[in-house]
Image 1 (spheres, rainbow, N blue to C red):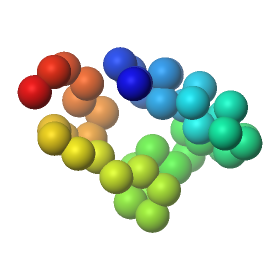
Image 2 (spheres, one colour):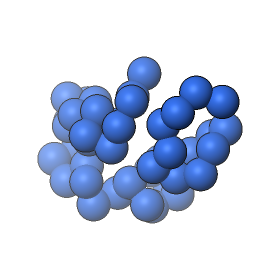
Image 3 (cartoon, one colour):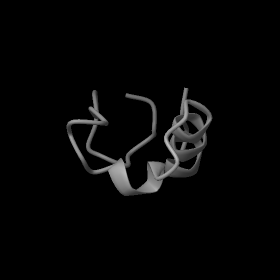
Image 4 (cartoon, rainbow, N blue to C red):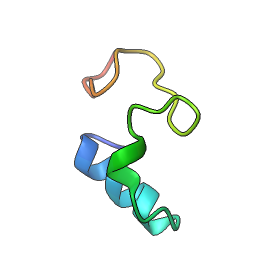
Length: 43
């Protein structure tokens, strides 16, 4: 579970995506659910 953009970038990097920071706002790579993009508080 990611609690920040930094966490998500780390997870994507470990999965082999070297430019993870560049895809956070690309819906073909990241689908934000339950809240707005870059919002990590519990719903």
